[in-house]
Structures are given as C-alpha cells and as structure tokens.
Image 1 (tube, rainbow, N blue to C red):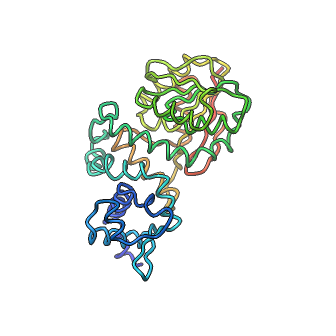
Image 2 (tube, helix red, strand yellow):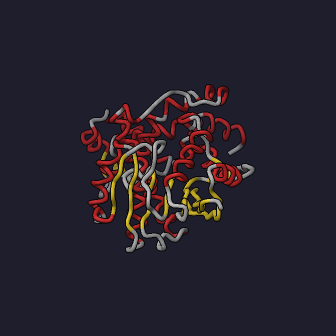
Image 3 (cartoon, one colour):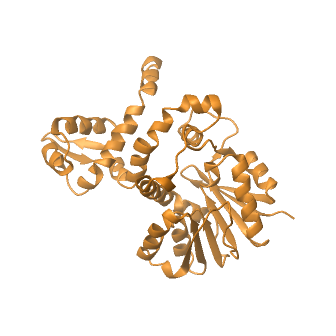
Length: 324
C-alpha cells in the first residue's frame, strides 16, 4: 500500500469502529459462536434487513472478524470470537463515545472535554459502561496479578473497582487476603452479583461512596486501576490526597494505568496509547501520563513511587508508599 492509499485509509478508518459496533450490537458473535449460519437465518435472528446485513457481514470478512464460505454460510474468525468478550466495549465506543470524537477539534482547541456527560444520570449508559469496564479489566487482570505480588496484604481495597473483576482475580490468585470493593452506587448491584457468581462474595465487602469524599480505611493495599486517567491533574491530585489521608501510613498504593512513552513512535503500541490519551481528552478533559508525570503527581500527594512494572495490554503497575 502506497502513501496515497494509506492516507485515505486513515481518513476513513472510522467505518471500522461502526462496523464492529453494529456486529456487537446485533449479537453476531453470540449467534455465530457454535456454528456458521446463512445471512437469511441471521436476519431473522437479529431483525436486520437481509441484503444490508449481507453487506455488513462481507465487510466484517475484510476486517478478519467473519468468514464467508462458498455455500453462503458465515462464521467467526478467532478475532471474531474475541469480539464476543468485549461486546459492551464495542457498543460503548461506537455509540456513547462516538459523538465525543466528533468534537475532537473543540477539545484540542480548548483543552476541555467536548461535552458534559455522566453515567450517573443515564441508567442505560451506566449499564453499558460498567459491562465495558468489566470486559477490559478481565483482559488485563491476569497480567496485573502476575506482575505484582498481592500475597503479603491482608486487606486489599479496590477503589473504583466496578464489578470487581480485578479484585476477584487478585483474591482467587491469593487465598489469604480479603477485599473491599469501593465504587459509585450504580456499580454496586453488578459487583455483588459478579462476586457471588465467582464464589468470593464472602471475602469482599462492597462499599459505595464518592472518592472525593473519602475511601475505606484500614486496608494494606489500595488499588486505583484506570481511575487517575479519568481526571485532570487537579482532580487526580485530590483523589490521591484523599487516599493519603484515609489509608494507613504503612499501606501500599497500587496504581494501574497506561504509562506514556516520553517520545512517540509509529508503532502499534504507541498508537494504542495515543488513541487512549485522545479519548481521555474528548471524553473527560483528562489525560494519560508519562512515568515522570506520575512520579510528580504522586509526590505532590505525599507518595514515593517505588516501582513501575509492565503488566501487558498496554498497562503498567506503579507501586507507591507514603513519603517519609
């Protein structure tokens, strides 16, 4: 592909987001999970317009999501199977986040998020968001637990822990610790249900509240996964200050975030990081951060950054202790 073709592909790349989003919204990964099916069969199952669904399915073939057999049956590739594990994220990205990206020019010129939006005021959005965050956490949880040793801690507090995917992975890997899951009220019901499903509800206390007001005390480790990147430096510093105030002086702060490189290059890993950074801008008026920026942010709230460990899926684990 020459540069002319590449630039056109970049300019029109948004079509892939919508194609994958619609595939997830129609439930195609679920419908094709066990066997290949014809477009007529899928049209009946989804309520879609048959000829238009055929065009979508053929587009998904070009994206390596679906396969098309000579007899007209469509199936899933291994990538298509993986779409089934992040369906809510695809729906969130192609529906709720889509208008935000259309206002990127506004965000870049003003430095602010493109619109005010809160899942607290939209139950449908909250449900999709919570499922999406659980899916993404599920992808990276094993790598986080493998890269950081949680076994010395008796009580692990997951701040902003959503439905408890990460906390459940930590506790299943280490039978000794107990957990506290802290998040907004909209996440609590799903958290209790999920923790019960995975058999560790008796080891976890679910607590609701606002991280700007306070966090549960008495834990040995405080985990902030994908929390700080949702906020600008001022609010991120406030969150860290609350944690510093409420956690024991001997506790460990475990921050799980993307760590931006000091200098970007044209690689898949750096493109993913840049995409996430711009998404934080348009969605929250916030940012991803470099290691030096994390170190400065933590120091300002009274923490010393002790270690930074790559955990896979673009994430790193930053371990910090109370200064002094």
